[in-house]
Structure formats: structure tokens, C-alpha cells
Image 1 (cartoon, rainbow, N blue to C red):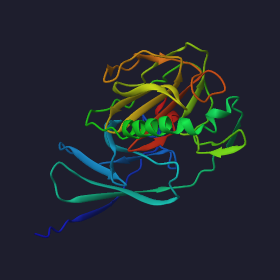
Image 2: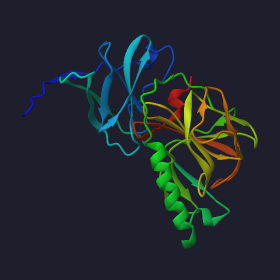
Image 3: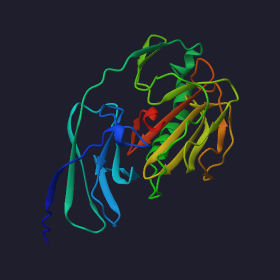
Image 4: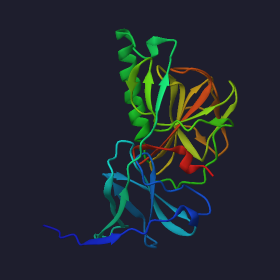
Length: 272
């Protein structure tokens, strides 16, 4: 039987950052986030952006879809679509994205093997990339506390989104925030979550993936040590590991990536 779906074309009320007491700040650029107010309902929300479920949380007593915007997203008009509970009526909520020009970062890596791996390294790298894709796409319906804390004390370098040139060779834009800190400084979970991946990886060194719920995932890389186990539940502020200089680095720091609906976004948008 062919089912006719009623499309309710509703322009989104996009929340100004100034109205939010706490929680994420909107930035309608590639690598940013869109905050889209949803209607009140006692049913479970099911909303998607480009086929992937988006985070829905309460901000300032409003139901809000928090949408991650990929770094490769082109400027233009986009929408999320979805429904409440088992309702058939499909809602569409629209928003616009503008372009952003990120700076270029030139980095000299002493160990050229971390820039141009040997052929013997590739099997390990491909296997690790597969594990990381799986960790990044992990999903659960767990409610998310979006009032994040900074995972370590240090200097925020503002490196998210920068085009990177390693030893004269272009690589993909930087997908996380670098926090410069001394070796051994504690790394804490910015919110409750579950450890879904960890280990010593070729490029990222000692890393941990923590899934916070509803497709929100933190990646912590280059640590000197890991202080959690796979599958472990962690609380906000709990020790994850310690700052280090493992993997492809120029010195001790924490790399923190934050993913929403499969897109790495600027973690600074989730900090006070």
C-alpha cells in the first residue's frame, strides 16, 4: 500500500547564542553547529540531518536539535527532517549555512615516517582507520548533558579547521582542538559517557573514544597514558588519561575531537 506522507514545511526558529544560559553555542558555518528549536512533545523525537540522527536536548527550557555541520559542507540552505514518536507526519526545519575561511598551519614533523608511512605500516593504519570509523559512528539513545567541561587545563590553540601542511605536504583539515599542556596533566571526561574504543594508534598515539549518547562522541589523542578500559562507563570529570606526546606530534598536548551526527565540529562551541 502506498502511504502518502504529509510534509509540514516549517521554517526553523534558530536560537541566538545570547538567549542560552548554558550549553552549546550556535555557529552556522562548516565545522559549526545549528541550534534548531523543536515543538514541545511528550513523544520521542526522531530527527535526521543527511540521513543521520541528530542530538535533541533541552536548552533554556526549550527542545532543541543540535546539528553538527561537517567541515566540507558547502554554503547554502539545509534542513533537518523527522517526526515525534510513531507519527507519520514528517516535519522539515530549515537553516542556512555561510562559508568560513580557515587558516593554514605549517608543521614540521621530525619523524617523517609519521607523514609518509612505510609500506609495512599501511596494514596497521587501515585497520586502525576502520576501528576509528566504527567508534565515530557509535550511537545510543542515552540522554546527553550538553554542559561540557574542558577536558584538560592548558592553552586552547584555536587550531580546529586549519588546513595543515606537514613537512611541505598538504593533509586534511584539523578535525579537533589542540590544548597545549605539560606532559602528565590529567585528561578528564567532559561529560558522562562510555568508552567505545582505545589503544595505541599510528598517527594518534594513545587515544580514547568516549560516546556521550545520541551520536555525540569525544576523541582524546596523543596521551602519555590511558586510565580507562574498553566498555567502561565514565562520569563527567572522571580521569580518562594524561597529556602526552605520542603519535604524530611536535610536543605534548591533548587533541580533542567532538563529533555530532557523524561530523567533527569545533569543540570550543560546547565550552563555556
